Image 1 (spheres, one colour):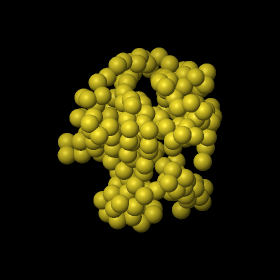
Image 2 (cartoon, rainbow, N blue to C red):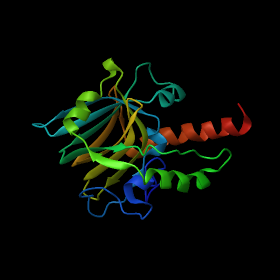
Image 3 (cartoon, rainbow, N blue to C red):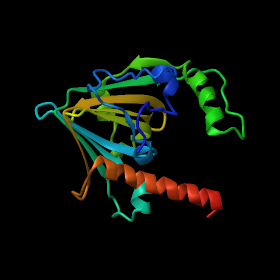
Image 4 (cartoon, rainbow, N blue to C red):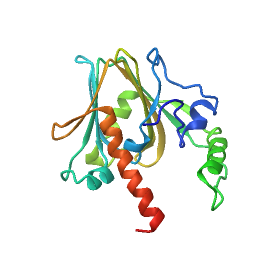
Length: 216
C-alpha cells in the first residue's frame, strides 16, 4: 500500500502545486495520507446518502473491473461509510480554455509535470455539498467518476478522505470528507479491512500490467 505524499496524477497541480502541502482541512493529527488509487481509480460513485441526525455519510461505488476480475456477483457494489461525520465539502474546477496536449510517446514521469503546469491554470470554485450529493444518481446516469483518492487515518481512528474525479464525465471535482470512523463493505454485507480493499485493486492492476506487457 502506497503511503506518504499522495501524488494525485490528475490533480497534483491543483491541490498543492507540487509543494507537498495538502489541501485537507483539519487533517487528523499524526495521520499519514495513503493512496487509494489502486482500488478506487475508475470507480463510479453511483449514489451518496448522508444523514445529519445520525452523522453518517455513505458512498455506493460501482467498480466494474474489480467486480469482474474477482468474480463478484453481478450488481455488487463497494460501500464506503463514514460515521461521526465532521466535515463534507466539495470544490469544482473551471478548466483553462487554452490549448493543451501531451506529446505522443512520453513516459508517465515526463507527462506529470506537463499536466501539472496545465492544471495549475485551472480555477477552483466553491460548490454546494447538498447540490453535489443530490446530483449523483444512477437513475439519471449522473455518476462521480473517480480518478484518484487517498485516505488519512489517525491512531485514534479519525479519518479523512480525499476523492478526485469528474461529475457526469464532465466537470472536475474534489471531495473532502472527515469523520470519526470509516468502514468498507460490499453490498452483500461482507466487510473489508482497508488493507484487504487495497489488495483487491493491487492484484487487478498487477494482472493488468502483465496482460499489457505480454499482449494478452
